[in-house]
Length: 266
Image (cartoon, rainbow, N blue to C red; front, side, top):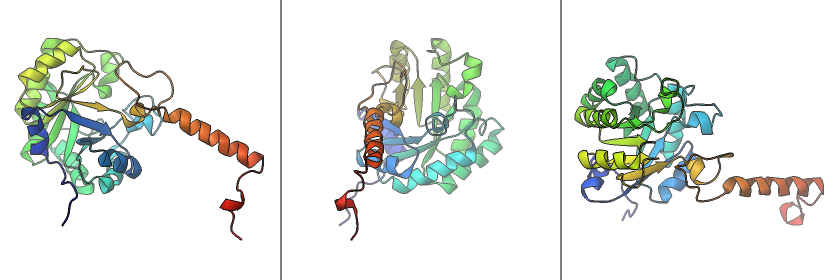
């Protein structure tokens, strides 16, 4: 008898809100990471365009391409057995008209094992969300701080326009989004939006009142060097552990300690 947990579906993911079940999400960008996250029982895995920064080393999320997102999502999809797999639509793959957005999102679904895509925007992207949903492509929306609009927003800042944020969230829901990420908004505002929506809210820098939370995998494990954003809680210091291990290996090789007899074939 197969005892493996079944993959979470989009309707099940949305139903977690009504059931009062908090939702956990993390990013993943490769097979090994996705395997680890999935085995931990995380409900949702996002192949985020944040890979532009944490994997490729860019200053923001704008440079990553559709082909690169598909490449990483295909690796992640091979590892996932349980979580709902969502893939970011990179800039500007959903800004080229509804038909092009459907074509690009369709490629993501056809060439990876994901169940849904995520795109930034609310009111101004409602027609795109509706078009994707009408084509049978589940969509997670993303409002608040929108990293793809970093130049327009003037940097990575907390978004406080409550009227606009509520309108964006409602527009995304009305267009058919099954969930919405709320990034870097005041906690009280996130509570209001969460109470107003039927679909689950996934917070990142939006306080504890959301229906779920998401973090970047590298931030969670302390793999990101330098100062972390206020909303990040590192649960380990793997950067420090890994750096120490590499230094010890370097020293062992230089001192002719490695490889020792137990690592040598006769």
